[in-house]
Structures are given as C-alpha cells and as structure tokens.
Image (tube, rainbow, N blue to C red; front, top):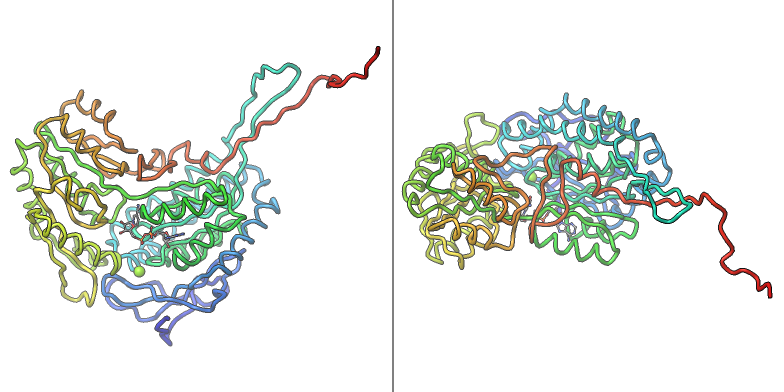
Length: 523
Ligand code: NAI
Ligand code: MG
C-alpha cells in the first residue's frame, strides 16, 4: 500500500527523534512516518499499514500516515471514554479546565510557523494564507477557555410547591470530530475548543488527504499539558476508521465538516445510535451584485470570494448573480482582475494561486468545467489545467469564469469546491432573491449594494446561515457559522456553540415531607 521510503524519520512521537522542519519549496528530503495518539501514547496502527500523503504542489509523497482501522477506533474511543469516566477532566474545576486550555492556546502561539509549513505542504494552500489563518488559531482556544467557567444553570421558579429545582449543563461524553482537508487545523479548532471547554473528551479524525498538521497539533497540545486521553487522534479513510468511529456505541456526539454526501451517511449512521450530530457541509453560495454597488469593492469581494484558496472553501461565493444593467461591464472587470495572475508553488511568496489540494479534487474541477462547456455555458476566463515551471506533477488549474449559466445547469446547482465562478444575470431584486434561494444549499450569501434598506430586506429574505453585505469571507471565533437546508445543522463559533457539546439536567430537591399517596383505609 505505501511506497516506503527507507529514509523516513519517526515523527509525532513524544519518545522518538524529531524530523526536521520542512524547508519551504522544493523537494522534501526525508519522508516522515507518523503515529496516532491514543490515551496519551503515540501508537502504530493495529493493522500495521501506512499510506502516503502527497504534497499537491509537486505531486510527491512526503509522509506516511497510519491507516487506522476499526480496531484503532475502538482503542481511541475506549481511551476517551475511560478518561471521561475517570473524572480527571470532567470534575476538574471549570476554571482549571479553562486555564489549561488557555495554556494550550498560549503554547500554540509559539508554533504557528511550523504548523503552517506542514499544513501548506499537505494541502497546497499558500503558505501566507495558512499562516494568516493559523495565527488566529489560538484565539479559538482562548475564547472557549474563557467560556469554560461561565456555563451556568438556572434556578427554576417551579410551579410545583415544595421543591428546589435547578439545571446543570453537563458534558456529553466522548465526542468524535471529523474534519476535511481544506483548512484542517482551523476546522479542528472550531470543534476541539468548545468540546474540550465543555468537559468532553474527543477522538479527532482528520482527512486522509491532509492529516499531518492535525497530528502535529495534538503533539503540541499534549506538550502544553493537556492530560492523556482527553484528545485522541486516529487517521485513515472515511469509509474505514471514520465510519467505525461514527458507529461506535460509546460515542455521544459526532461533529463533522465535509461533503454533503458524507454528511448524509454520517447522520444516518449516527441516527442508529441516537447520537447527536453537528454537520457543516457544502454550499453553492450566491453573490448578488446590484447596479448601485460600489464597483471596486464588489469586484474585489467577488474575486476573493471564489478564487482565494481556489474555491476550496465551504463558503466560496461560487454563484455570481449580477444585475443585467451592469452584467457585461462587471464580468469584464472580473476578467481583467485575474489577468496575469501568478500560479505556482504555494511556498513561493510571489505566488498568487497555488495548486488544488489533491488529485481527486483536480479531476473533479476539470470534469465540472467540461460539463459546463457541454451544457452551453460561455467560458470567459481560464478553463484549463496548467503546469507551472518547477512544480513537477502538481495539480494546478486556471481560475475559471463561466457566463450564461442557467439554473438547469450542473454548474448552477452543484458544489465544485474549485476556482470556477458561475455567472447568471437577474433583472430586479425579486428575481435576485428567487435565484439566490434556488438551491438546496444555504451556507452563505453575499450582497453588494449601497441601498441600506435593500441590504436589510435581502439579509432577511436569503435563506443562508451567513449573509455578508459589502464584505465576504469573514470568520471569527465570536460569530456563529453554520448551514440552512442541505448545508447542515448546528452552529460553530460564538457563545452558543458550546451548548452543542452540553446536555441539560434538571435537578429537583424536595423541601417538604412527601405525603402518603396510598393512605391505609381508616374506615
Ligand atoms: P468528505 O466529506 O468525504 O471527507 C471529509 C471527512 O469525512 C474526511 O475526514 C473523511 O475521511 C471523512 N468521512 C468521509 N466519509 C465518512 C463516513 N462515511 N464516515 C465517517 N467519516 C467519513 O470529503 P472529500 O472526499 O475529502 O471531498 C469531497 C468533496 O467534499 C469536495 O469536492 C467538496 O465538494 C466537499 N468538501 C466540503 C468541505 C466543506 O468545508 N464543507 C470540505 C472538504 C470537502
Ligand atoms: Mg496531502
């Protein structure tokens, strides 16, 4: 299964020698061999199998990732459950738990460059973009660390006389967190920070396409003092170890980010065990540009919304709806804006667009482009795979814009998760709203207008978990994200996200003697 490089170094192993930090760009001299973190130990997979993880910038394998199996899922859940039940985490004061998470956050601040280099190497996102994203990473832990001891129950003014009744918000138990490859650490933090602050223990499974940075994060969190068994990481494929985790009877909750299809499978499997589920799935997020919009701002926002990260973002603004009065001029501005864009090595500071994150994704994008052509959409920008110099067999594709995209076309309906913008015209606000909502997804939407009343009307009428007006792509630990319709359910980030990892208990205490319900007959 794996092309074992004899020069591998042991890594992600608190006991073994550390490999060198990856050097920016170029080939990777040493292949790393990772292990899984289970109950505080760095373990080989039970099946003794590893698989290659690929650097999408040049198509080369650079590390070996354990191929976890059902046996590894069992071990990890058992460790998480034992840790939860032993109480060392759960019954630690909430303040102490918050302090520990704050210590983790502060510790991470000093290791962001290392994490970013590994993540960029594994998923091809530009190093500068990963760095920007990960410099913010500790904030998720700080935010939820602060919430840990502000989880308050209430005293119920119960209408039943003679009782004292209060509520407690208790952790669920073992939480399984399953993450995708586009932003592995950010999306892991969205799940870990609230789940841990609430007092749960976690088994985290990163994507098979980009697992390395997650293993590194776990190592750092362990070094920062997170107790053994609180966070466990297993790696491998969705249909293997992923499905085993979801089906495991000792798991209380699954929190997942990824594709709609996998989300449906996970929700169905979790339903058998009546597990709680949070799903953050795909989108076909519309960007509505009205003729009264500030043109420069709208052009910049729309281009960044689809092409930053090559559209490999759940909130990518992939469907541009533009008022017919400005359609041609606006499309022209978009095309000009992307002319001469520099495509290449994500470690090169002058690169503006890197590779697709993996080969299946590259193939999927090219198939979408071919289908859009067959269905009669007009390609006005890009539309080809590219092979930048010095990038080996990396998976690159041009930023692509199609106009005359009609609602019946695949490109209007399905998530590409790539740098492909579908442009459709609308006549008036009514039609714009109808088109914006003409999708089974509902993750995000962008509205570009200078008419304040219209912006408020549209923010109410568009069915999406996030509506941006004259801005796009913002993400904050303070602000809730999540989907309407097929984009999922539950919310991440913000003050309420911690409730997704808690359950409410109502405690009744009798204050008066209990009367005899079955008095003896005194007749
Ligand atoms: P995926 O949804 O299959 O994988 C995401 C994670 O779920 C991975 O860790 C995977 O191992 C796991 N997984 C998959 N099936 C599972 C199952 N039945 N039980 C448990 N775990 C399971 O996504 P994939 O194949 O990597 O990408 C395919 C498409 O998904 C992309 O083309 C894109 O359209 C979409 N996607 C959406 C993302 C988002 O942020 N909403 C992120 C990544 C991909
Ligand atoms: Mg990779």
